[in-house]
Amino acid sequence: MVQASGPALPQTLEAFIDWEPTDWFKYEWKDREIIRFSGMKKKQYFIYNVLSKLFYDKGYYQNGTFMAEPDVMLTAFQMCRPDIAYFTNEQVEAGRKGEDVIPAFVIDVLSETDMAYRIEEKIVEYFKADVQVVWNIIPEQEVVYVYTSRKHVTICLEDDICSAAPVLPDFTISVNTLFAQG
Image (cartoon, rainbow, N blue to C red; front, side):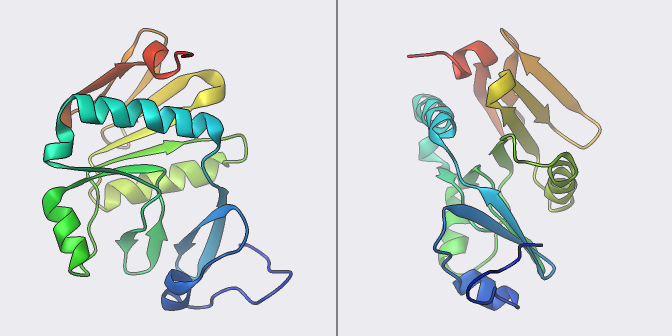
């Protein structure tokens, strides 16, 4: 739980959704608990840029959008902000009408401050909410964990190919390409 040293933290989900923190952290809400993460850093922006170009080059922009740090209501009591999420055009339209939508594909770019038990909690919550593919990217070790369920994970290194199938079947990239220095 985040401790406040200044103004009081939001006490309800509604207040949390309207809350505009003044620091550079990213916050998520889990049943009255506020969880603080660091936002994307320069290395994460590079990864987002590489993946966005791949998304565009494969033509997926015609069917949906790749969004950075969207608010995603996993349950009535939990709002998370994956680093990157894919939403279909239908989901974007439903969101515009105020409906909560669950992306089928999410990516979290992990940092040294992410705690293992929080990462595992998030994976559990994603799959309970019907996310189909989760990538956990660890830039410092140049590794990508590709989950298609809690039991099915592929650890990708070097020339291994990361895939977003079945959500985006042609969205594939080698780890070396993902981390290539320009």
